[in-house]
Image (cartoon, rainbow over the protein chains, first blue to last red):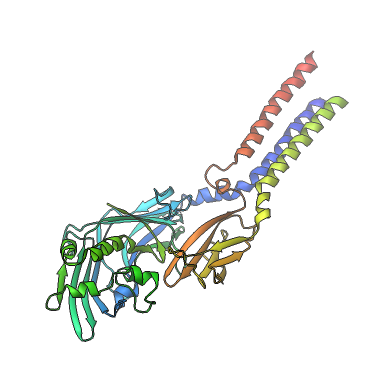
Length: 274
Length: 146
C-alpha cells in the first residue's frame, strides 16, 4: 500500500512541470475570451488638407477643390497574422475580417476632417491591422463611369482654369497598418475604433512646398499638362479624352500615378489594377 | 524497493530537467545574442530617410509609443527592446508625409500566444508524461503479481 501511494505521488509530480510550462498560456486564454467581445469599427476616407483646403501644385498652379469624389467598394478591415506587408503583396491572411457591403461615393474635399464612409457594429474585438478596398466605377451620377473625379479651380499668374477631371482606372488596394500620429484599429468591447483610407493628391499634382528635385515632385504630373489642354479656361475631360490630348509621356505618367493615390495614412499600399 | 525508488527518482529528475530545458529555450535564448535592432529607412529611390521620425510600440501597450527617436543621416536607428515584453513590436518611420512600419517579433514565437494555446514541445511533454504514467503503473502492478 505504501508503495502504491508512493508511485501515485510520483506520477502526480510528473504533471507539475507540465502544468508549470502551460502557465505561459494564461494570456492566450484571455485573448480567446476577448474574441467573443465586440465593438464598432468605422471606416473613414481622407483626402487630407490637400483636398479640403487646396494647395499649390509643383508647377505653381494653386488648386482649390469643390469636390473630390472617390468611389469605394469592398472596404474590409482585417486582423492579420502575419501582419500584411504591402511590399510583398499577395492576399491578406486574417483571423478576423469585417467590411462594408455597399459601394460608396465619398467627397473627400468636403468638411474639415476625414469623411465617415460607414461602420461595422459588433466587429470582433482585436487589432485590425490591415485593410483592403477597391476603387470602382460608379454606376450613377455625379461620377458615373469613373472611380475618382476632381472638380475645382486652378489659378496661376492671373489665369484661371475650371477643371473637371474624371479618371476611370479601377484599382484594388491592399494595405497593412495605418502609418500616422497614432495607431488605429484597436477594437475593444463596447468601444469604437477606426481605420482610414487616405488619398495623396500631391502624388498627382506635386507640391510646391517640396523641393523640385524631390522624388515626389519628379514622379508627379503637376497641373500644367491639364492647364495646357484647357479650352477657354475650362477643362472637362475623362480618361479617354485626356489620353487623346495629353502627350504620350504625360498620359503614361498619369496612368502610372493613379494606383499610387491610395494610402493608409502615410503608409503605402499594394495596388492591383482590376 | 530501493531500486524502484531510484528508477522513479531518476525518471522524475530527467523529466523535470527536460521540461525546464524546454522552458529556457521557450524564452528564446538566441535573442540574447542579438539584443539590439538596427532599423534602416529609405525611400523607394534608395535615398536614406535621414532625420525620419521613429516611433516604437511595445506589445504590452500597443497604442502608446514605447519610445521615439530620429534616424541618423544614413536613415538608421538602433534600439534595444525590453525582452520582457514578448510579442510583436512595431516600428514606424515617417518623414515628409510618407512612412512605413515594420513588425519585429521579440520573445517566444507568436504562435505560442496565438490560437492553439500549447506549443509543440509542451504537447510532446504532456503526451510523454501521460504515456509514462500508464506504462509505469502497468509495469509496477505486473511485476508485483509475478
